[in-house]
Length: 201
Length: 270
Image (cartoon, rainbow over all chains, first blue to last red):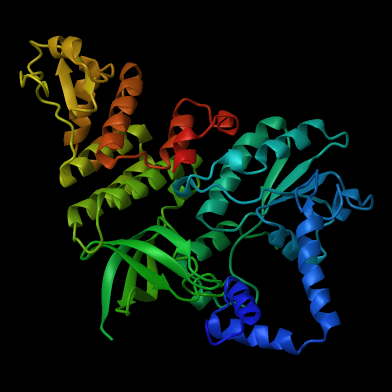
């Protein structure tokens, strides 16, 4: 990157490390930042540093938070009876955006992947069990909302095996034809799921 | 750009970008190959379901610069029973991983394809899924030339099938069964292996009838010995453990819950 002045080359290099950013986009972003006011640039830099310093995991549900216990877990208006188990904080946000779910969450931090050697120990499964066993308020239902793919399904099966003996109701989010989708374009595996999960009208 | 049609089983898939996946396909005609399924990570993609592991596809592929591209895929079989049972799913995953490890790309192996497929079907209705899985291991090893020596002592070559001589153990290093004398003299690791285990394993290695295999049950006394011998034999041939075995072992000894506390050493090393 001899064509750039050193600090600029460094910035371009840093941007290139980001997902989905190639050399051209990195250059564009770096030049954009060069044009920013010092204030704006500082604010961006601060935001990056702050997110690294202040964001940690919630002690209860392992969602990202800047406190010891996250806002959702502390929200007394939310029900303690239902826990929605998700793989990733991004999944939590997706469900939260629907505004439908009024219980609490548990973030596993991944899914079981036998071929990659990711076992239950690498996930927050032990913590989920502990939560179910110790939490004062009775947890009546766990909704398993992992992705409807092989690993997500395997994780759900594993959790069901583990949780059912505790006397908790274990449910799995439905999968099937997407809203606005087209039956003709749905694949066989999806249609089977949609058919099996049909509902009385 | 040339396009071709093939029957393929998805062995594994890894995300490539926000929207694409790279699949490891095992095709009947071309052997193992990697292909990109563009857009298949989108919920609305027609390929999203088909490009999951353990799907048997009729696929249309287009030759690409580096990787071929999956342009169309129709699911022929999705093995819902295997997917819906954690134990069967783990065994099927192991079967796929083993095939992936034992084969190289673009080397046609129609027998291996047929074997995996029939194993997945057998798993769906097997009385003892481990019988199906060990038969698969043994027959796949035979296809690639890694099969353990079972008919005679691997050290002194004396016949062990007739029953005049008892097996004394299994030597993973030598890759076969030892007679009592040789087992006593062997300086390498020798695993316990009884006559019952030997007969069971020979039976599984030669069982080609799917219906009979589905009805086969491994005698409880021989289970552990067979598991351990085959595991050790394979580990030496592959030079490391197949990753999904840690799960399988825990499941077999009924300690799936203990996986939580069991240190997964073999995996941490990888």
